[in-house]
Every structure is written in structure tokens, then in C-alpha cells.
Image (cartoon, rainbow, N blue to C red; front, side):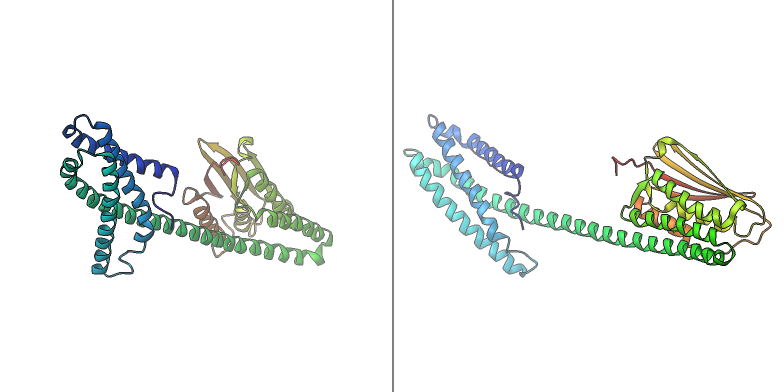
Length: 352
């Protein structure tokens, strides 16, 4: 536990400044009764308050052990009364010693005028001191609790993100290995090409997984490697187009987020279609937002592929965790076109 007054320079300066102000108010209250002795009276008041200020700084080392959490109310009050009496008597004894040195000739009159004021100052300042100590301890404990909860939330958030990533990657790997297995006997050359593309893709995912956010340029490069794998798999049945705003390329996006949406587009737009289907990707900036759209065509007459909804659900969960609900995934169906749109805060590398 750090000292509530000695914790930093600003607190120390503020503490002694307040005592100087108290001394000036005392001086204004009593100086007219001692004409011709203004300097001596001011010196006596400053010394007595400086002594009390120093004593209160030292008193904290004992006061910190007096608290209601470990003591009953009666014991708590009794301890403070004893502490107050001891500090006040010690302070009065020391200040009286300096009064005798500085105020010879006016000491009796000075004690008569300032005695009640000094007693009130001792009691009132002690009450203010213990109030400040307990409020500061409560505030410090409260802020430490918030910081601990924040760290726990970050740990939980990181764990959830890792879990979501671990759900995405095996899902894609399973589909790719399934396709390679099917191609091994029918077309070994294409199967080998798929293995090379898959190796490149997995190498990227291993390095990208260390960073929560990656540049859109890297994410698009990774997705093109993924789409190359699917192109080998589906051939001329699938066609990809990209419309990318160059200014959006340096901006940050969650790693592997687009791959999930491309996979969803292929799964529901190409798998069961008998004809050629297209997938179009677009990135653009709208004020301080980054808009990413993946639009795929599909055959309305084909039997729709039933999924578990894991892909889009994971995307939404990751967006909530990474952007604290400041990002949005929306979907739209128009005739034979399905569009998934990511609306993200535009985060540049310098702002990350």
C-alpha cells in the first residue's frame, strides 16, 4: 500500500500548500491582537502547522492498520480516539516549546487567544486526514479491481479469439484435404497443385495468428491463396473479381476474417450449382468506416446446402470481441445474389 500523500510530487505539493493556506487563515484571525509582533506570530503559526503536517504524514504508517474490515466498530472508534489524543498532546507539547522561544512577552495572551482554535484545528484536521486516507484507500482498491477485471477480460477475450480461430482453420483444412483426397486418383497434378497452395495458405495462417489485426492487403493476399485452392477444385465453374480501393489496403482488419466469408460464399453459392457462379469482392472507405463486401451468385433452383451457421456466427463473435461491438456484419439476398458486408472502424497501423 502506497502512502496517500507521498505517492507523487503533486500530492506532496498540494498537501503542504493546503497547510500554508490554513496557516494564513489562522494568522488573519489572530494577528490584530498582537500589534508589533506580526512576524513572530506568523512564524509560530507556520511552525505549529508544519509540525502537525509532518506528524500526520508519519501517523499514516499506524493508521493504515486501523480499519473496520478487521476490527469491531467500538474498537475502531477507540483506537482513533487514542490516536487523536496521543497526536494532539504530542503536537501541543512541541508547538508550545517553539511558542516559548518565539513569543516571549505575549505568550499568555497568545495561548488564551489561540488555545481553542488549536484544539479545534487538531480535531478537525485529524478527521479530515482519516477521511482522506480511507477514501483514497477505497478509490485505490476500486481502481485496482477495475484494472484486474480489465486484465481478466483481456485474457478471456484472447482465449475466445483463439478458440474461434481454432474452429475456423480446421473447418477449412478438413474441406481442403477432402478435396485433395478426391483428386488424388482422378487428377494427381491438380492434387499436387492444391497441396502447394494449401501449404502456402497454412504458412500464412501460422504467422498471421500471432497478430490480432493484419493489413487488408495481407488479408487479401491470403484470401487469393485460398481462392487459388478452390479454383483448382472447381475449375471454370467459379469466377472471382476484385474491386479494391488502394487507400483501404493499409488499414487493419481481423486476421482470417475474409477467408471465412469467402468460404461461406463458395459453400452456399458454388457447391450445388450446376452452372457457373461468380464471387465479387469490394473494399471502399466511407468517412471513418471501412466497408468490405463479398457478393456471390447462386442457383435459386438448386437444393440449398444446409450448414451449422458456425462461419457467420464466428465472424460476428470475433467482431464483437475485437471492436467491442463497434463493427457490424450484415447479409442481404436479392434474387440470385447473396451479399455479406463488413462495416468496420478504419484502423490504420499507427492507430492500432
